[in-house]
Image (cartoon, rainbow, N blue to C red; front, side):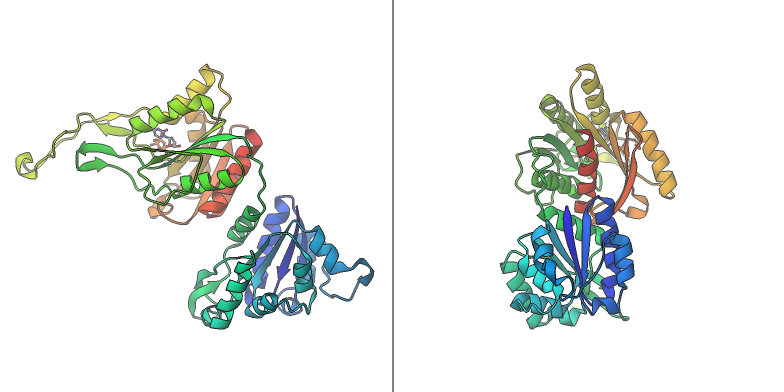
Length: 397
Ligand code: CTP
């Protein structure tokens, strides 16, 4: 894709380098347009070297090529990051006094704007009004991240991470690379009853599975979501089946398996269940000072699906997840390689859950391994990670 990246004059301008790198590594042709003030924060040489394209923000050079029109018309996607308060105001009024705004007015491509400024400036009614004008015109304006700002202060105003900006921008260009593919995704965590009011469960929120279902749907796939006790809102999907226990999840997976092109097992499945769950509430007063619950193994749903795929010659790509407590990145990869082998799936996504990371969080870090030896890692929002997993899956499906 041809992507125009506008960089305006804020302290976060240096983060544009991360955005350029992610876009070029994904094979996109990136043309950077810094404003004059952006060049006070970052050098044109850096932007040229990383983008592999010349950088000339002067509206009045190469006049014969009508640069702003050529750049605007040839762009498939435009990103402005960071976007200052001044940029938002000029864009909202169409004040075309530099190459960047002229290019933006000349483009029909989707535009994503990522503002970054001090909290007071972001919350100022002038900025709020400019942002609503831009949004009302179909421009995607990201909310800034919350955190440390230039000085000692912190609050909403930080530029979101490059991975999140890139994921949100690419989501605007509806690449239908999964069109017609049927994808079965499990999300959430199973609950194994002890009695009618108690269960054995886990911390899985279902956010990663839902992000996968959302992104896959945007990319054209027909998604069936098996939602195990998911409390997060579920978007509109082709089909949603709610399950609770591992046995119900296993049944649903097996019912759907023959009519899917890919199975993504993002759900945390309980390995054991209570052998004889009580059908009446266990009363504390009748139990004494200790009780023993006998647990028996649940079927391994993923391994079972993989063996059926092999024995019935089904054309289904299988993706497993591994939540590991690893010491570091190398240890995580080693555990992931072991699990890929043990589960027999085509792709394995591993994340490190040491010290409570991942569960319920909006960001995580994963390493993605394929049976064919491809290893990639990603840190970012669950949406960015979902897109990366789907990129890997897209190569296999
Ligand atoms: N899984 C499954 N059925 C189970 C347990 C897990 O299908 N009974 C799936 C999960 O959905 C996940 C993958 O297997 O995609 C890895 O799960 P995990 O619990 O990390 O692996 P285990 O097999 O339980 O291995 P261990 O506890 O030894 O780490």
